[in-house]
Amino acid sequence: MSVATNSPLWLGASWVASQKDVPWGDLEGKTVAITGATGLIGKTLALSIIAHNNQVGEKSRQTRVLALVRNVTKAQSILGDESSVDILHWDASNPTTEGFPKADYVVHCANMTDSASFIERPVEVIETTTAGARSMLEYGRQSNARILVLSTMEVYGQYDSEDPISEDQGGFLDAMSVRNSYPEAKRLDEALSAAYASEFSVSATVTRLAQTFGPGVSYDDRRVFADFARSCVEGRNITLLTTGQKRNMYLSTRDAATGLLTVLVKGEAGRAYNVANDDTICTIREMAEEVAARFGNGRIQVEVKVDAEAAKRFRKGDLLRLDTSAVRELGWAPKVGLMEMYNDMIEQWKTD
Image 1 (tube, helix red, strand yellow):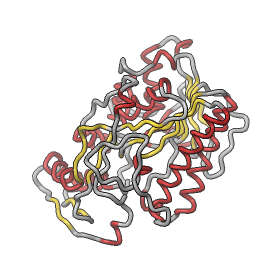
Image 2 (cartoon, helix red, strand yellow):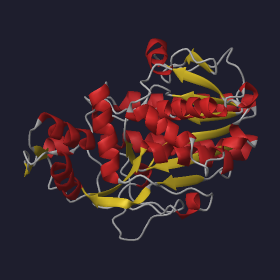
Image 3 (tube, one colour):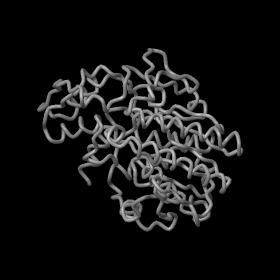
Image 4 (cartoon, helix red, strand yellow):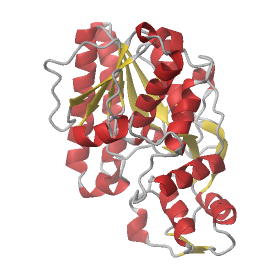
């Protein structure tokens, strides 16, 4: 394992590994395939399993990880040469699983999450997103595995209501808006998951995650939450490109990992689960102000410079509040707050 043991990324993985409400017993002695194992959520999951293996010790109880990645060298730099990890080349843009070992569980994390790409490369976003999901569903079918496909809260579209939205509800999503290439593709991933469950009796489930971050986010990440943190690190004002009135929910990478593992083992085939931290809901402006106050050392302020062109990258709608009662019924609950997520991310940058 190549991640520093004192880094927030590894400490977070060790925290996940120690959570008693995660169904680790069902995973012991099994094989878990993870796509996108160098991405934010994928590597958190892989490292959490490695950390659990270290805690378990006994080899027969360890969980084998198949890390399916586009960049093998990058994966080796993160996961190292752990005996319980096999790193295999897999690319969602041209996916093949020929010759891959069978897995007991499959977690499809690989995604294009850079919102600028949704506008700049929408065809690639749609093709890669759907081809990757289809590849993993078919791989899981051949392995007789339980499959978890990661989706997004963006599939709900515009749903401006104070009431939490449950998994069987939906808002308006304009298919003719290029920005919606990503949520429309994820909707198709979800439809494929339900279709495989219905037609082939595949145990496929879906998770719809709130915006997720924590240690492991790249310093040059172009999403809003990362820009806020970067502004604090660099001592410059946080600049909002909108009025900042949109309200969102968030999720830590640690809570995402415990939630995904819970749904992977306990989730009902053919259905979706919202995974979010109810306590994190706030406007973009409120989040910016709190981040500046907590991490700006009194040196920075929040300024508004509305840029209509840049705003096209962002999801439409002013409020999206997810109902998390279904995943909570499986025994999961979030434990990491919004500012702790920021602290973990910033501290990790200091070690990179």
